[in-house]
Image (cartoon, rainbow, N blue to C red; front, side, top):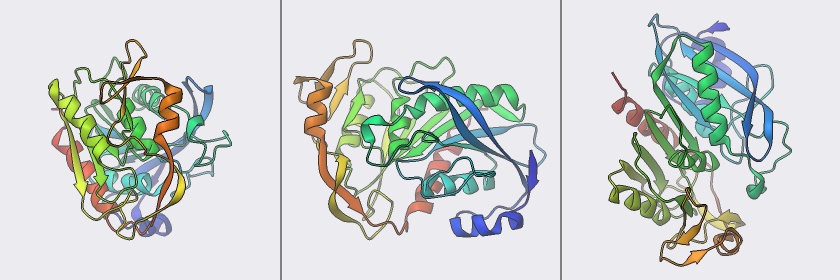
Length: 309
């Protein structure tokens, strides 16, 4: 594992425009075999950053890229993430969190439009957490957090139905779609969903998901970013492009115990019908990221507010 300071990564970190990194940190890149249902056991590149401030342990954030990996390339060239996770890496370490980022698309020949073929990166995250806690004594097992953007945000929402023996301390879903979500069941941790008011993944579906969760006492809230689009940018446009956003006012809800689906209005449905109704040729454009650092900061505020003693 290499010990680094901010200036040795200036070309990377200055471009990220996140919070200033005041202290050193160690960095390790590696490939670990992780399993999920669609692809089975596959090699997954991971990069782990740990603050170098002398504390005995650090809370851990695992952050997941979206469908477009347009950000930081991992040390050694295996793996890449997106803008959200790139900025999350820097900001998290600056606040005293360890942070791990994984590349769920590595060696899978996936394009951003291959949405029905994406792996379940949420399952990768659960297994990666176990791997990291077993190998690295400086990570605090009571304080593990998960976040992701877009597809990564959907993977964060998947955690709401995952029956993990070790629950997260908190989860943040950045720009999840929420056109499908799981029938709520009691959650032992809080969830924050961050949405732009001008997103082409319209906020109403996530607001419905949060409302349904709160009905049974779950701590799920939605934070809106005014005038921001899907990319936390202020120059958003609606354009032609495949997006799973056609069911924003009537999302489909899956009972994970039975596997059955029902629309929010009570109409039973199937996965095929959901795909027909919810996929729409209405995408979003505009990636200037004026609100991205604020979104990352709000996510970390949420994690800090939910640190366990």
